Length: 233
Image (tube, rainbow, N blue to C red; front, side, top):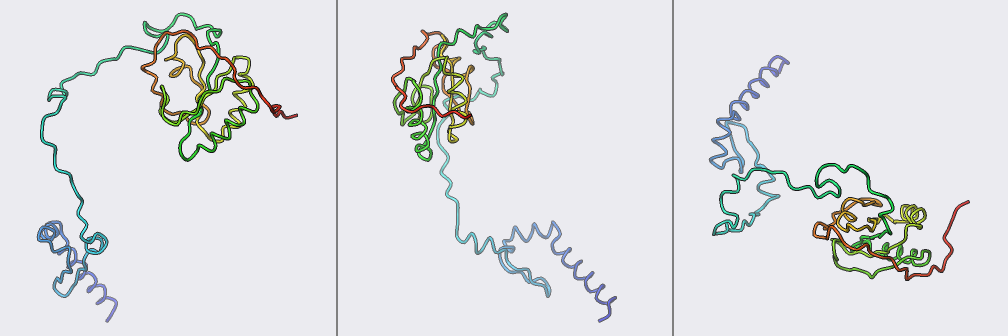
């Protein structure tokens, strides 16, 4: 066969394929269910799609039946217009504040350590290190969400004079745990939502239900260090 004859044959074969696989005929074949089996078209054979007959087998997704009843929200919710909610950020309820808050409003700090079933050993080790080195007020293990904290956690409270030591120490010794550092002021909700510092990543804190005004929480250290804090040259 000459090169010219081969080119002509290939062209005719390509055209035959194009004719049979045109959108209209392809739709017809699909509708007839013929694409799931081997097709013989003239002297050409189209092999079945293996992912339909072999990989999927007799798989059929189980779809639960539709619920019967009426929506408790009614059928007019699409008519509701979007409106601006009332501001809850501290100092901005009636526009931007005129003066900043005094830094002396912060009386102490809390450090909350979050962990789960995969990272509890890290939490236990950091807790042990803290007990050995810092005069803090150490709380209990919370193995379930407690208060505004949505995962297991433990915390300790510390006074302002320890800020230059504890914050950098936690940054270097967090072991990858998420740690929430918040001040204690007369606004517990803002303390947990807006005045926060985070070591590593942040996570949700469900503090919107906390009071906006309350007595400042006091710190009573219950830990006596037994190891001298490490310090470089």
